[in-house]
Length: 504
Image 1 (tube, rainbow, N blue to C red):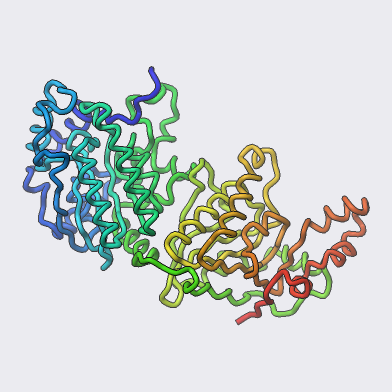
Image 2 (cartoon, rainbow, N blue to C red):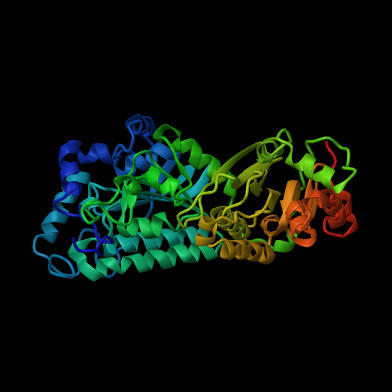
């Protein structure tokens, strides 16, 4: 099988795009529905994993109300028409295929753009109609998407994409493929404007639709069992692992944030839109820092350096989950580094505290892997772009240093995390809640805004290793721990932390 071509919509004419439409058996009027209505029916239909809803059913399933956005005429053509018979390539039968798609779906293109409210938040929604030539992207699709992104920028609105597409429309050749550049440019412009972008991966999300609208979103949710991947089912190597092309496989590989059952999707989008807030221009100097959490452990300070180590390593010491639960009223998490990795030892996301949103990146007491550092850096940069203050919880014996971590780019990942915190315009508040092991801990510690709990320590290197390297005598580890001055009170005297946070 030849490689390449995976950006094209393999189902765009005689494949499953048309076959699914024939099997569906619904009338065009029923599929169109009433703007803002039909939500209950849509939610009921969505309870099956990856039920292929129409574009309008998908909007109604997540929106409180919606109205269809004005459709641009495009590049000098009226809706439903083309600049030349059978499109820019003169592809025999293309006009007939589009006529059949219109008859079957009641739509004149593969995407419906709408202005919707989701959880009371005004939003621009892009919803794909897979029954229209496999949800493929052609020139008029690009016109609609560009107009929708532009409207979102002009009115300061987030964009929610409900994606179901096989990729670029082959009957329009390179003119269709270049629409991916248009979409990528529009997405980048909205990103630069500080506007959130959320994607919902329906079935299927493949080709250029995944590589632009999907993978470029700030938060990526997927329906269970959805086919997700750059390569569609007909162009993959014959021996490819099918699990790699599913929503669950993409989640495990760190490429999406969550797999959400259809009956929970509306609530998930509502929470995310509330957390990411109403987009606005902001002055970084006016963003109020996140307050450090109250300490959850005992208030007594350790008497010795080794005593600090023992307390910080105690299995019963409060960890990140306890701090996040006590600090936030509610929260949602992102997952993965978008580079093929997930580190369960770090928690990143956004939470609500006393009516405002704070982003968080929290180490969970394990050695932080490269994927964890990259996920934290992604979180900090997203929060910085949206004007949201950041809280980091530092708790790790250090960066993972096994061979797998080195092959995964441990050094580069740590460097990128240092850079993300150093260049953030929004304030970053950090609190040492346990072990502070060398550069792996320091990478998540904000310069000049670090606090510590009484049951924590911070060290240039583990005391055991320092004793082995400098004294070649493991029996001197207690003395070495004292010499390193790693207790919270030592860190305060050295000017490393701003203060020691007591229990509430």
